[in-house]
Image 1 (cartoon, one colour):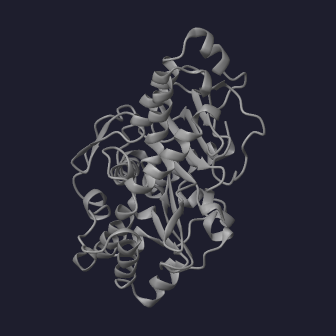
Image 2: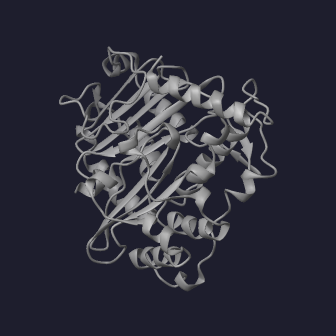
Amino acid sequence: MKAEVKALITAAVFSALLVSCKKSSSTDNTNGTGTTGGSTSSNPDPIEVTSCSSATGVSKIICLANAFKGQLDANQLAAVQLTYSAANAQKWSNLPQALVQSNYKRIGLNFGSMTTTQIQYAKALVKAVAGTATDEGWDELQQLINADEYLNANGGGSSYGAANYYIALLGTPATTGTFEIQFGGHHTAFANTYKDGVLTGGTPSFRGVEPFTTFTWNSKNNQPIQQEQVALSAMLTALSSTELATAKLTATYSDLVAGPQKDGAFPSTASGIKCSSLTTAQKTLVLNAIKTYVGDIDDANAATFMTRYTNELDNTYISYSGTTGMTTRNDYARIDGPSVWIEYSCQNGVVLSGTHPHSVWRDKTKDYGGN
């Protein structure tokens, strides 16, 4: 068992002892319902910032960033408005904050240190830079927070939950210069980088979820990452037996190759089956899988990225190991193009029984805005 998993289990057990009034439900992770306490109070909906309603594009993003900062006191503002640098941009992880290595701990303000109104303003900003599709973009981010609230209440304890999600502004949001809107927590890393008013990168973008099955929380049926799992499985099951043999990797993958703190860890030689050999229908399924990741950024910029990835599709490879279902431990899928890099890895649950996925979207030339 990997050290990080051992650490997660230790933290979960310790937190569970601290909050012994909470009953673990790891034998049934499909149906919890948040009703009082953390669910509705620490995960409020974003506010409608009327002063920014007429703005569009990056002007709206700057307006919302300034509106959020206007809600903060001096100490909070100093914590959230930081220098844009490689060191700050690389401070993201899939782990709960308490278990992240000290030199990579998330920076900025966590929801647990903000008022409900401040959280609503922060969310209004994140919502504006995320995609609008169901189960993608902003909807997916909300569901991921709900999943962590679920873990908090069902055996994970205080290391999990909305209070442990962070937002930071790296560089001052403006139409000139470079800035990044960084948001993340357990199983979530969202990073949009802008240069001179243009989005230059929406990666690294990490998504994972536990529980993996549909669960009810915050009066919502949540199923984040299931669209990715279904799309990747459809991409693979559309291959013939001969094509599957070509696409299958010889190694077993229990985690991501280019996950957190593994910048640039792309193989020098692509493996699997090249998309130029696929039928038009099969290529469409590859693009559908890519869209479930690219759709997490705002719709207009997602379309721009998808055009580039579509143009590069014939030189893109797909591969997998394990089974094609993408639900069993060590099931693994990869999309490796001249620019796009997507990985999906199915692993054992940590707080709950069953499996749960980790996945990442990177861009070989646009990670951290290409800076």
